[in-house]
Every structure is written in C-alpha cells, then in structure tokens.
Length: 279
Length: 147
Image (cartoon, rainbow over all chains, first blue to last red; front, top):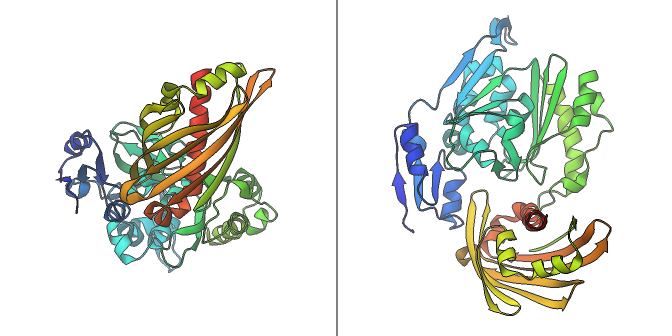
C-alpha cells in the first residue's frame, strides 16, 4: 500500500479546506475511487472521506398530489424531490417518498450494481464521476434535475460535459440533487450481466407534453439526449412513435461488450421499453 | 490495444508559420493535453512528462516525443512513447499534413496509438473516446494558440 493522508471532516467547509490540498480526492461511496486506487491507477495524496459529514444523506419531498396507487390506497405523486449527495442507491431505491413520487428513479437506483454497490455508492458520487455507463446521469438529464453545489445551482443540461467530465470545478462539492417529478417517466436498461453497468440505458420523461429522452452507456462523450425521439414522443407518447428513429452509430462506443451499431439498435429498443414502463 | 484517429483543422496562418509552430517546443508543451514538462533532447527529440487523467484514473507518463519525416512546410510525423509506471505504457504517432487553402492552412492528421498494460486492460471501454478527445484537444489548443 502506498501512503496517503486520510481526512474525515464532519462539515462541508472542513471538507472543502482539505480539498484545496495538492492532489486531493473526495471519497463518497468509494465504488469507483477505491478500486481505481487498489489497481494503482490513481494515487491521490489526500483522500477526503465525506462519510463523516452530516446532513448530506437525506431525502425530502415537497408538494405533489394524492392519486390512487397501483396497490390500492392513495400515494403522493409529483412534487419536488431533494436527494442529498451522500444518499446511497439503496436508500433511494427503498424510500417510500421516492417510490411514490418518482417511481422510475427508485427503480433505476434499485438496478445499479449489486447490493454491496447499492449500500455504499451514492448519487453525488455517481454524477460527479459521470461514468459514461452510469445510470444516474440519464435520470438527471431526462428529468432536468438541478445539481446544487457549495457554490451554485447547475442544470443537468450544463452539468454533464463529456466523458467523465462535469461542470464541477476542482474546489466544488455536490450538496444535493433536486428533481421535479414529471408527469410520467420510465427507465429501461440493457445491462452488462457482470457489472450491471448500462450497455445501453434510456430514461424517458414526459412533463406537460414536453418529452426528454436521455441515453447512457452508449455515447463516446457520456450521457446524451435524442431530440428526434423527444419530438416524436411529444406528438404521441407511445412506443410506436420511436419506430424508425435511429441514432447515428458513429458517435457511439464500440467495445468488447457491444459494437456501436448494436448499441444504436438497442437505444431504439430500450426507448420503447422505457415508454411502455413510464408511470 | 490499437486506436486510430483522424481530424482536420483550418488555421488562419500561412503554411510556413504553422510548420514553425509545430516544431516549437514551447508551443508543443502548451498544446499537449496534460503536458507538465517538455525539454529539447536534440534537434528533433524532446523529453516529456504528461499527466493523463480520465475520470478516476490518473497516471503520469514519462517519455519521448520525436519529429520524423520532416518535410517543411508540407508536414511531418510526430511520434511519442511513454511509461506510466504501474499504469502501463502508451505509444503513438500522427502524420500531420499542411495544405494551403484560401483561409490559411488546412491541417490534417492521421494518428494511431497503442496502449498496453493495466490501463489498457481496465480502461478498455474508455480508451477510444479518450484518445480521440486527447488528439482533438491538442489540435484545438494548437488552433487557438495560432489564432
């Protein structure tokens, strides 16, 4: 093991102070950083563990309206969902508030990795890393989420800027992500059976006639939207609306798991499934 | 693992000026993404330290950059190789061609890269996108410096 300084701040300000050090890395759930360090592919001098910072793993739901639930009884749908950066995937997947107000997000979180990953990995860590095959970036982009940092609020459209790149500055830390529940939304993923990363994942969200379609797992520059599908679904929110719309394969990833043209095909299939699932 | 990339840029300068800039160590240092040091070892050879960061992966490559097949002002071939310690190695080259156009000079490049070791094994799904991004960034930086 090589040496590094381990810091365990208890406040955001203290974390930001440590982050100013040369080659410092924030540690949230550690589901990417720790394996990378174990492989010696990253060797930060300072690791700033956010696990001791309180108040960043809460789920708050405001507004919404009572509707009939699938299992009978009423559920509180819609409204605004604020998820703290250190909230684990398991917390989101199991939260009644998320399941009722934005079920597609709960089901997405429940499909990330395996239980070990879901119990450690966090929403803030996932979007800060912006892995091109991660699930949360698709949800944030399709739902038009707002990323709140210690400095500002960033719209999802401006947040994901490329392969593993975000609008975050070196001294910026995500505090929470704010989702406004859409009319309906669905997420369909063709997953790698081993890692459960998305080979292709498509998140579809409809809000007052406006539709957003975000694709993860497939783009060479990470998550992206598909305007042609959005326009077609805005006219008619039905799986048949995306028939014949094909995403150009030249900007898609080819790797040992799938060739670019296969991924292009899968985007159509997953988009349809997401529309069918949308609730 | 082998990667191939190509691209084209139009620069608002004449061919001779572009060629001179392409041979200037300080210019190359500013334009190579993540380049921390570039020192002249001989007329056409430089020693380089380049820090590569792709998401969580961060490795410092130490190596050489060489300019070969010099054909002023039509172009040259730039080659390089580096060792990134436990991360692995990277080696590659780009044929750079300059042609005159009304707006100035058109620069076209055809590059190939080989990456091996741990970074290639583990980062396979990231390399194609990253290599293209690095090449594009170099030429975009170069275009910006000349404009």
